[in-house]
Length: 100
Image 1 (cartoon, rainbow, N blue to C red):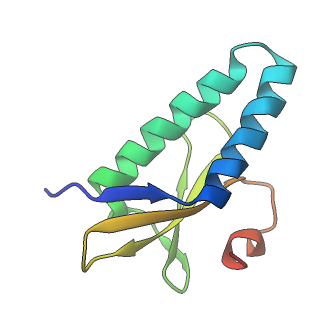
Image 2: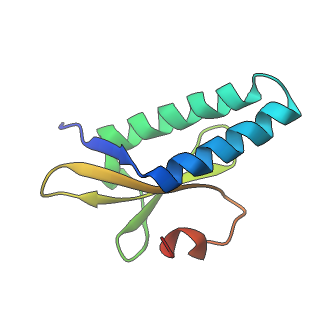
Image 3: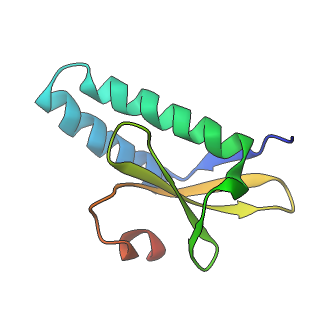
């Protein structure tokens, strides 16, 4: 099985920074746990991106294992690259990522 390259767009990195700060305010160390959960999810995406359901057009969602977040991404099969366009709380409106 081939591993895909994962590219996290800057706007998605900002999503993570905001979530990290919020969780760290709630409890020291919780932000790091969020980031660890995200890394596990990104590794799952890199190993098998087509296993995640298409939600709209070519946009796919990968839910985190522990935290109520999902990575929103699309696949470029021509160069085996996955582009993460958003990392959002699952209770946010789904159109947030499609507007990116």
